[in-house]
Length: 239
Image (cartoon, rainbow, N blue to C red):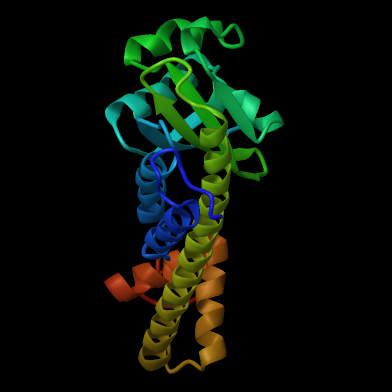
């Protein structure tokens, strides 16, 4: 028999719908982050709000998407006071569940201030770890002990879907950026070749040399040349 959620929805049907919604945002990182936050509230039982945040160096929280000002404020609070479930515990545990925020002794400052924002229960899920940067999915509830075993199980499954969708969006975004950069460089080379009778290799050499001398990325040099018609720092002429 297919597993069902407490509200009677088939789990497989719910996760299939989530996968389709996340796929619709392919290549759009910000759109994918927003979709993850929105879909999580609909998919995970008892979740009232959700946020996706990046934690850098265990000390700085960067809210990236949220379903409400409340969720964003809770993320920002952790960054301001330097503690909270999203901040450090997720580095050691893939799932952190806080049944009663006000009574939790692990993060005393957070426990004192978060309830003032209307946060009573939380669950945090690890999305990814890249170097010193962590991606976290944070679920919030307005009542204590809101999340149960089903919430945690569905949340873990959702986080796995979300991590794959986010990785795919990041990869496609990088590919698109790479193609756009190549197009810019090609246009810049064409301008130099036509204007100064250079070969393709010579034109690329000019761009590479200017990039190195000015300590700027190659595509930035190419963009300025195509925008202005002049070689950056070269008074309009290649060196």
